Length: 237
Image (tube, rainbow, N blue to C red; front, top):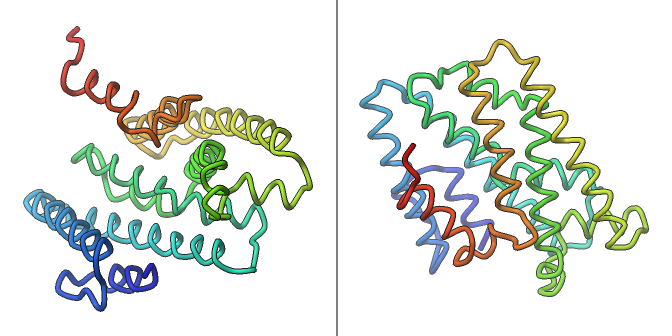
């Protein structure tokens, strides 16, 4: 079924759903509907180049998702580094950053989108951070349901360490990534500071979403409260 969805997304034709059925058909229709709204807004702004970037990033997300599913199903186990590269794209880091730049309006110039597509070091390490943090919190659940495509799982098998030892190594990697993000944002001068702030804020959001309470994966818990506080009942300064 994942292959069918990938094929339909790759064609990017709202009228072509191939043999999609059930929730896959619903998901495809939803994506087409959302991006049609984006298209209408961006066309009115004369910024359709943004839509092209967002579509391409979404296609990459779906393609890498299929790659992870195939790894989980098959006997071929990727190296930890291979998984981290594909997994970082699959988890939506690049697509999310691209979408956030779109939200800046005219400040989000074509050069900013091309910069993200070039996969600068700061974007790559943030993709890795997202994957590491998500897979730490999902590890028990993933393995429990037989889904092996998990960074912690691959690291444990590749390096012959315990779960506890692997998590300690991941924590070190994440701390190093935070330093790299700061360094890269300071020395990147050809990109708007507002765009770089989106990068920094994305990194900060991970520290909120992936806490010991796993805010991201338990949406009826603290995440709902955070969103309500931010958007429904904000503190006015």
